[in-house]
Length: 135
Image (tube, rainbow, N blue to C red):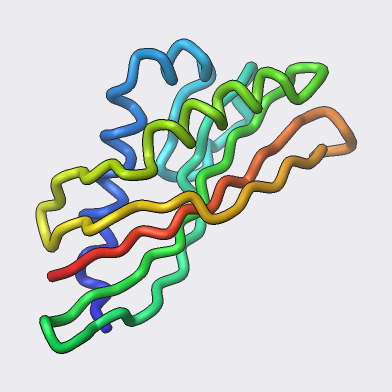
């Protein structure tokens, strides 16, 4: 198993999301690769937790990164958060961002969960993606 592509993958996913003008229009609160110090107003995205599983094989080392992308919104309903989530779901699967270390083989959507947070003041959608990388 190799974790050496983790930082490169984080950077590549962040660059992919921040480089999309359509997503930027849907998330005026911004896109963060770490939780923001204060809760931004509007809708925003945070690259979150990551689990990594060894996927090395006879061709060489590799890993499956299970990445969390959170969409958070203070809008009254889920429509705003779902629109941003749909855009992320259209961008990431099948994207092959270039990494400074290793290479992305594929990105797959895995799971989503929509919920209310902070006493119903926020809507949050947790999107989980599986990313296969090789070194």
